Length: 177
Image (cartoon, rainbow, N blue to C red; front, side, top):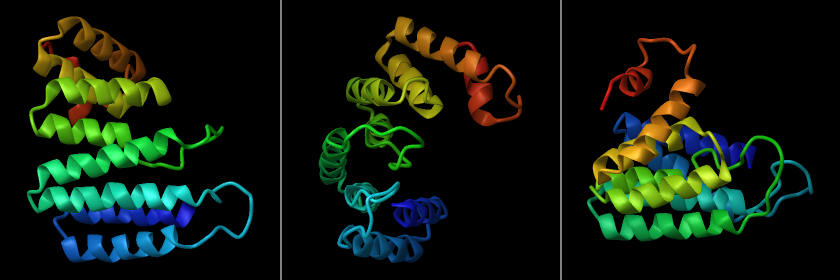
């Protein structure tokens, strides 16, 4: 799982740079890892992790190609697989929670209601996760749900009370909506 997590993060960074060939190279690595059985029962040995990260990355590539419905369906499948994982203590193996990623995609597709549901589910699994709270805030604003947006903003202000003021996310939360 640790190598799969690294491959996913590097692929996500490549997508952020619009470097599709590099993202596809890391996707191939993730696919290879998803077919390899763990050799020990220790931290990072859950074979499902690489498969879930592979589904997330594949969905993002499909989304880039303009296949929105297929990407959303793939992310729902990844979220279902993540929901089926046993709960463990320590840092998460799924470095980009599937519900959070699905919420971000739905938000980008102007499905505020669906996005809000996914961010709420993500927060059930990882309370106070800043990016899920930020997504929830954005989705709630899109939906006109001022109460949920205010709660998410207030929680983010508590979390980021000492954060650098020049960070875009911190500035967004500091502004009145």
